[in-house]
Every structure is written in structure tokens, then in C-alpha cells.
Image (cartoon, rainbow, N blue to C red):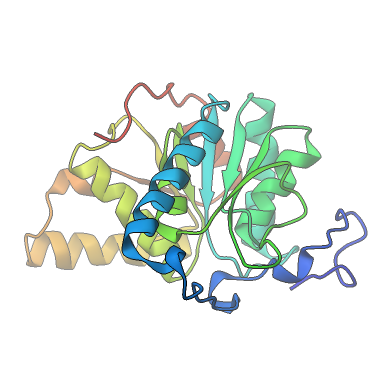
Length: 248
């Protein structure tokens, strides 16, 4: 993982670079044994994070959210595709929203920053330093992962998923479930980039979950589109309509 000493020369220097690591590699933290660790106080803290998150995002009316592995490095195929897509979308007036960390998140932010566009990171709040990549220009930090996760899906005009691990799959299936259950509009494009990665998952859904188990409807298999390049993804999401619906 690039640090201040190993980042490419073009990367902005960040004193927080050592925390720009995959979430599974972050240090664990424990709430102090005082009033802040009580259930009652946590309720207020959660509400406050929701308010802060929505207030922050209200200033950005036209955004696309990127998801994908935090482990890809600059030069990797999917890192560069995400970076390219960020550039293309900024050219159409979109802001790029990511989780603010490394890998695909950094790639999307890098593409947006290189093209002079809006580059947003919804970060993980740590006791000391923040986990944030050096290409984030506007950010908000969250203590609770589930609040941050909701903010990543709130109000975006489209969702783009690159190959990734458990977190990426979790986020993809959650978005698809929200669309399937009509909690968010089915007009929102969900684009899965990387046929080699996503096609076997689609095949499993089609053959096992739909055909064999009848656990989903055939229409559910059309809630997403699988493509193989940044350009193909761009052609789908560039005309994504404005969001007029939010979570019920």
C-alpha cells in the first residue's frame, strides 16, 4: 500500500497516508468506559451522525458512488479503469463519492481530482488519524460503519461496483435488495464493472437462486448491468436521472 515514502510522484503528500489501508487492516478501537459507552448515549451519537451525513451530502446534487476492493494498487487493471471512469464522469458534471480509502476508492477520487472535479470521501473515523486517501477534496468522517454505508448509497444517481471482496459484495446486494423491495427507485443504474468477476455471480443467481430454488424473480436479474470497461459504464450512467426519491 503506498505511503508517503512509496506513493507515485504525482500523488499528493498526506500525513494520514499510513491509515489509508483496507478496512480489515484498520486498528480496532474500544469505547471508553464512561457515559459515552452507554446505549442511551450511543442513540444520540447515531442520530447526530445521520444528521451530519445528510447535511454534508445535501450540498452535492449530482454524484455517482464507486464501490470496489480497497486492495487494488495504482497500475492494476481495475484501479486504472476506476480512475478513468472518474475522469469521464467529472467531464459530465458528476461528483465522485467513495468510501475515502485506498484501492478503487482512491482510484475514483484520483480520476475526479485529476480532472478538476468534485472528489468526495465518506471516511472511517479513528481515535487518532483518519483513514483517507490523498485525492479526497471534500470529506465527512463517521464512527459507525452502518451510518457511513447508508450515506454511500444515499442520493447517488448511479452505483458503480468494481471487483472486490466481502464488503463490495455486501454493498452490491444491499443496493439491489433496496431496489428489489422498492425502497429506492429502479430507475437508478447499478453497473457491475468486470465481466470475469461478475459473470459467475450472475450465473449463480440465474441458475441456482432463480431457476433451481425460485428464490428470486427473473426481473431481479435485470436490476443490474454487467460491463467490462470504464467507457461502457460511462455510457450507461452519464444519463442517469436526478434522484427524486430517497429511503422511505
